[in-house]
Image (cartoon, rainbow, N blue to C red; front, side, top):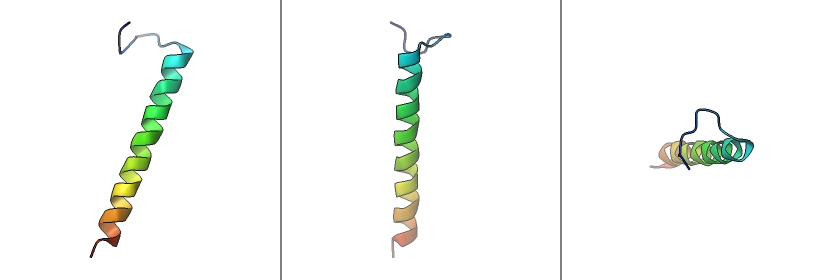
Length: 38
């Protein structure tokens, strides 16, 4: 099962969406932490 499929199925697309959301939340937390840091 290839990691990057040229034609991703529904499950793979949902997994990618979850990964993207997790990454976005991680970036937002990092930016807020850097702003609140003294």
